[in-house]
Image (cartoon, rainbow, N blue to C red; front, side, top):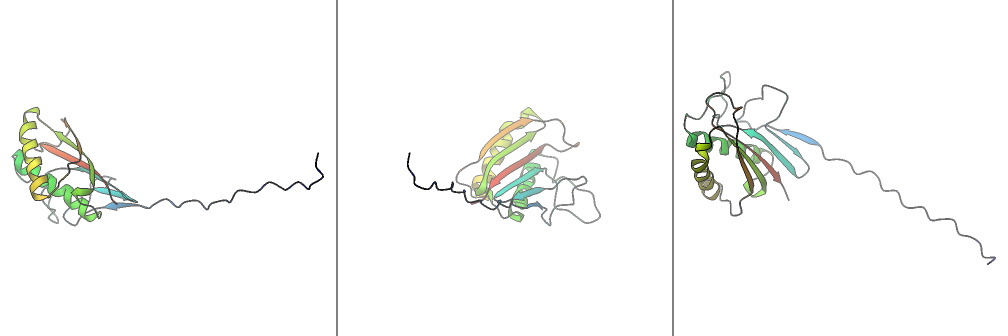
Length: 156
């Protein structure tokens, strides 16, 4: 056994806690205030979740929301524009979208929807790499609405 003094153990440096990013509601000026406690989008750090958007035309003060029209094409184009408005307001674009979920009210709309969706994302949005997507049939939309879309974006 050595007579050398014993060194006390070295204490590990304590890192200050990392402050969590603030959660911010995102509502574009074209959208009405939601009727319940939810937001059109929420951004926290580099994550932006766009809540389900439908084919309502831009908000008109004092008037209830109105669908873009009765057809799947009209509603899908407006729904995609509404998603894009939330993305833009939250500091994102379609290029940042990693996941899209689509809810249709009729299985007969799949082919037409896919055509409109592809046309919009490659033409209007100029998207080169499509996000992951899931489409399902959903019967819970208000009367007259044919499509709902939500999106998840991760910003660099």
